[in-house]
Image (cartoon, rainbow, N blue to C red; front, side, top):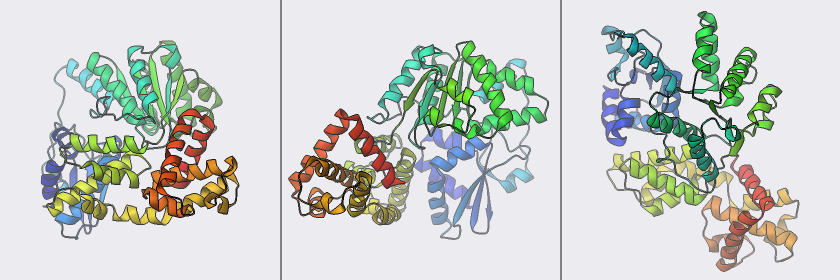
Length: 459
């Protein structure tokens, strides 16, 4: 059975708690060239999609000798399919249909309460402060989350609003607060949900006539964590309910942490009253990790998975994958899978083979020449001056900025970058890169220009 073979390999690839909690409970069936996996709920499918689907797809294709080309992950709502990780065995849909899992009923009221509390938490146990890699791009957000934990509900950071592009660790940080609180106070009432799941739960409560129960559950929390709050846009009834829930928790000095891809005042599609309340507390941005942070993230992920990743290989991956942490994890999973499939240690050849698709795309989109063109258009100066000899400040600063971007985004050597900038020597490029780092720390306007150009080039 293909899925059984995949499970054997996944048990080797992943840590024991990840395999037991997230992978083993999945139900599988084969349909022609597709392996279809079923998970107990939408949160589960999202986690698999973001963290493990690429690795599973690679293994399925390898183990089936190319017969299976696609892996899908869906929610299974059939009776007996929705069980917790420790209750549900690894199985297939055929086994599920022929041997339905027994319905486990609580024996005591105490057990039922415990079950409800567990459903409210929905926290990923791997999202802790100890497993979060900090760097200049996320340090303030991480420090703020730790401070929130010691001053829960304090007005100066309630609500705490984390914003920034997807895949940078906002969910990890907010859940780290929840996990730390539950470790310190096991009876604390913590709920994590996405804006989408809030809507789904509210609509379901309306359909089942359980609105009062829904309100009571949401408004009696110690900590409410809501991901992607911008997705409430257009959901008028849910927005109204969230508005009252939000106010009720703030009135009781209960902590709220929200995330979005934008700064609160940029959420113009939401109710102005709600956006105004988002700004009552503290808003902290999370930026894309710099190359040093990306290297440390890769090394820590590899260490936690028991993988020997040489630092020069981590550097190469970090130079090629610059967008977000999820893509870094996906790249590392692919490298590890290829290495184990070939039966060789991880080296630069294995990394290059694993990332050949990424390299091909980057070669077409991010090159030194493309960076020069984008910088030229951004500052509205002639392209010839970006590579020319003039040293006046109006041309020198953009030129240095372009060299710094080329070094970070292309991975080219100092001599290669120098040649692309009118034949300058490597020491000139080194000086430019050092100057860029210094100016980013000292000059907020320069740093903002740098980040804007990064986004333009990576979009």
